[in-house]
Length: 286
Image (cartoon, rainbow, N blue to C red; front, side, top):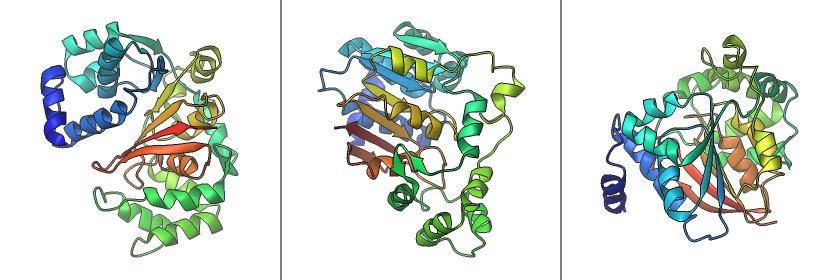
């Protein structure tokens, strides 16, 4: 399979400079996931949250298949940094609608986490956590395991212990979230950099434009509140694509993935387990 992906990358995306083999494998993962959309002729509009190498793929596919691509990001230069190619960035931006701004405000993200978790994507938190065990993966990238063990007060990591602790102790999840805090993350970045002047874009776009596919790939703490906006607004037959679905490599989308797995209104079409980040493609049926 990788021989095919390598051929596509070489022929159509040879302008992108990958920093290492791991980054190239992530690109292949995008390629596999997005290809599931090719035969659905009802797809017209795709919303991507967080720009990068995926934007280049969507831009080129959109040009060939007649898709309109909307990308929400604070800075178009971030695409240049990730593609490491000014020419490819210029070609990418020609074929997308770049919406400079934030999906959700810092205040909105903070309020989401402060209220606690009763449901995620309209699915009870207990059910979400039980399904999310499938997205705990410790072999490909174990770098955060030691800190997770410290938060759980255990010597050796065990998936079942983690799930039981989260279900029985409402202080554990905030402790785990704190492990993923970084300087300038989305819980502080917008305020510190005076970005609160930008109106949050996600709800407006989902309410006012017909979106067929949503790709959630922004910050560590954005995806959960973004999913609360996207899920009730995604049309029947529409798709959601998640990147960074494996914990503890990332906190970003493992609970969103658990919510989708627990929701009978969705069919999971594909889970890519070839990278530490992972990728999921699901379709809304009801």
